[in-house]
Length: 124
Image 1: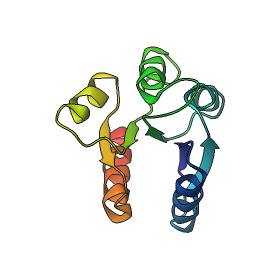
Image 2: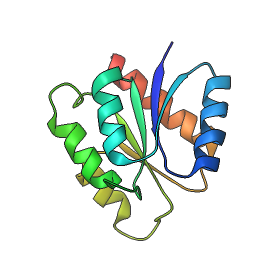
Image 3: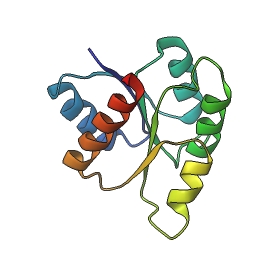
Image 4: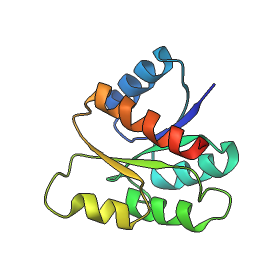
């Protein structure tokens, strides 16, 4: 079973995405801030991380940088989730170490395509 870590502080979004991902057969770990997300990633070694960029305690940009500089978590693909859709935000998330970018509100079918694409790339 593919394991996804969802790092999202908004309870409604976290619950909705978790339920939809679980219905698609994914095992979902949850974290509510960037620091907890980094800790769960180190402990559970998920196959992919969905990372909100506007998080309390440690924001998504800091969390992505920590994950990508840690030998154990560096190979885990990260998809940034953000309500920010202004010019430069995609590039900023990629520069922080994210492998892809998805805006909120989340287009779930499109997010699934991005997840599948990254997981296939990681397996290959």
